[in-house]
Length: 339
Ligand SMILES: [Zn+2]
Image 1 (cartoon, rainbow, N blue to C red):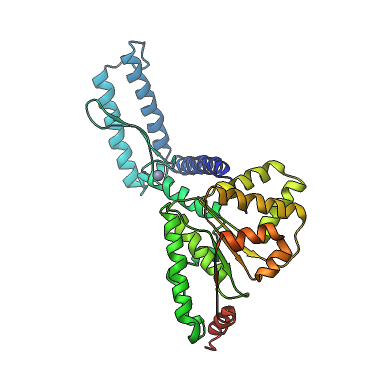
Image 2 (cartoon, rainbow, N blue to C red):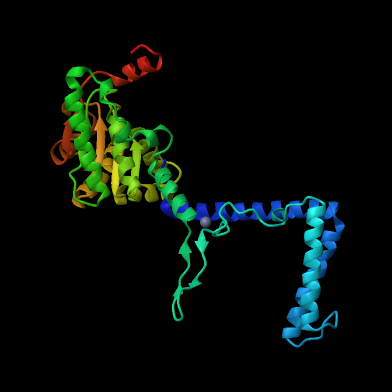
């Protein structure tokens, strides 16, 4: 389903804040348990906090609690630390249990590495941590709709041997051709939109998601929608959530690649046809690439979606035909050990 990239950032932020709170709570719970077991440790922790306050008061020239000098306080604190270490050993306590156990110690789960003095006059500004970059990358896949099996359907896994021997050369060529398309879009080069035609089970979805995976892998934005998901989106506009529809359709127009999988034979309303036309037309005018797949013949396309859409798809797209038999049967047979 369509999720806006803006809401993904907010969601990510919320997820991180919640996780940080959780990890801090876990630390407090561990500390409480340890202090219950060894009360001397709680006493030392309190005293060290008081000493810290007195050190600060000395720096501010304010009256102190213990009336000791800076050096005396330092020595006392050091002595307490030694006692603390001894208590850890005596009670087999891992000192790390008193610290927060960050998933990413580098950024303490914030996703950001703080600004750093990089030279005498240069400060390196805060930078995204590798964990945030990875998370954004994963979110791009999710936002693209590439989840579950779709994420696994890559060119590397495309297997021509599921096709009849006579069609394998053709399908291998077609695979290379669609892969070139994916690489071009990934590199931001101009590419003519693809119309993948062929009967059910010829691998249209596989090739569509393989292309989408290449493009998302290059950190471009992709929206991958089945036609029925597109219908759900349009219904949102009609019924409940116009804002979400606006955001969603905007993403369909703006994405570096739009994949519309499985334009089927179900008759669409005038309104759906209009929305579909607007999006296709907008992208074609901007020369923004699309992959559309269908099991309909040209005549059926025109009959179902009207001549305006059919003509855009058949004349404006690079139409390729997938051959062979229903490969899903072959795959099912293989899973059952039949072939
Ligand atoms: Zn990190």
